[in-house]
Image 1: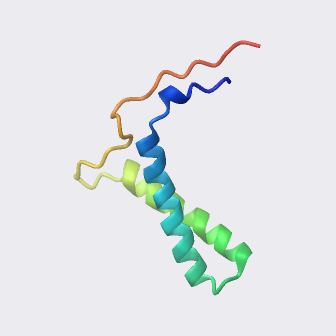
Image 2 (image 1 turned 90 degrees about the vertical axis):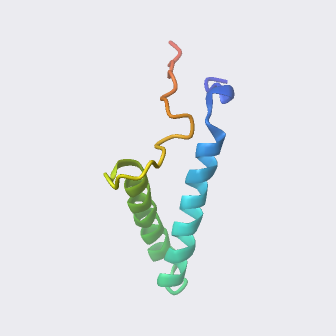
Length: 78
């Protein structure tokens, strides 16, 4: 398998999944169950939440990853 699952920060993945779940739940409420509009709105809301959490200079100590450091990504040669 080309992805080393041991290197995945699963807690951070779970946190992002919660962001996506909340964004899509709110988008579904706002779209009055129109699936296409809910999908677009959910993606936009996730992007807003992710950018706020990761890049906005709010002065709070929110992590941008759960480990605090970027993993080394090795792309295998074919």
